[in-house]
Length: 66
Image 1 (cartoon, one colour):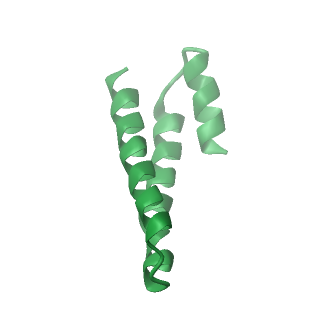
Image 2 (cartoon, one colour):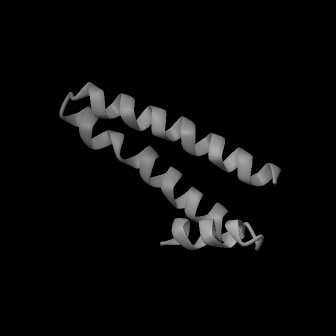
Image 3 (tube, rainbow, N blue to C red):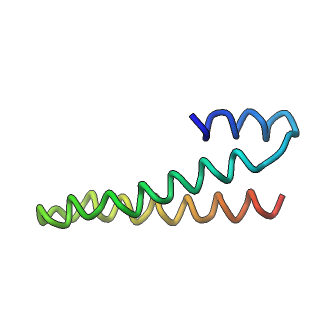
């Protein structure tokens, strides 16, 4: 929800704080989730979460640079 509201706020030229909170929440989830798949020895989802983590960090950097 924070990501959607933060994206709307950014599109309207508003504050970026909600977007950064949402991206932080997303990053936390992406960091926590691979543990489940590592325990089951499933590599493809772990790689997917690695790519998503890199994209989320890039989105955070782009948002901060605005």
